[in-house]
Length: 269
View (cartoon, rainbow, N blue to C red):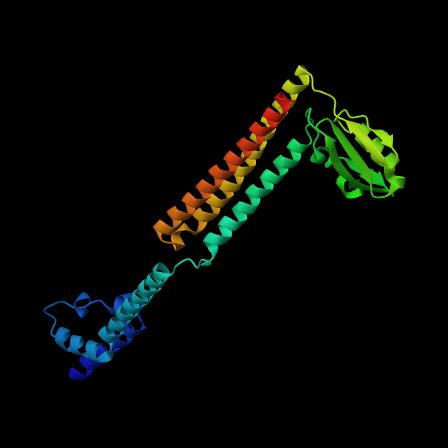
């Protein structure tokens, strides 16, 4: 009888070992009645056979896996965005260059507008075709002011005199230079009231265009700052944003002053 009972318990042990791990962790009471005389011996054999050891290892493995994941998560939380320490100066330098370029473009546009007063720079934008190549007039000739109403244009190459004359006549300035030896004399005609009003509208449009360019440069700087804000102290970010804003205001004022001066030059001519 004892031999049969021992063999039965051993068979049950083999079945439990072959069962899935989720079954291993079940108490032997699931398989035998609490009053079964074999229960106590089966429990002892089960522990010795490794049922609960295997279940314990599985649980431990799960705990280790969770702990490892938590550590990895903590590592990710500790990671910080790597930001170039020279980011601030770089953003300011780039924004400054863009705003300066906008002012230079405005200056070039305003110089194209003819007033009743002679100015050496008023011919700079005119292109002269010489030798099959188009070049700015100030690259092929010297422009000087004879008086407030007259300009002198002297080509570096005397053979280019006709080309320079044609270029000036074709420009929208409304000038008709006359040859004087190896130079051209260009008289600046007075502006009519209608001309003045039209020119002032052009100045206003140029002013708005350059302000938009300046504000676009500011927006680009702000977008760049937002992308790296998490990697800098808040005080540094606020300081940088304030500097960009002050730069914007300074250039907008410069544009306003240039346009007001041009309007005054037009109306007083």
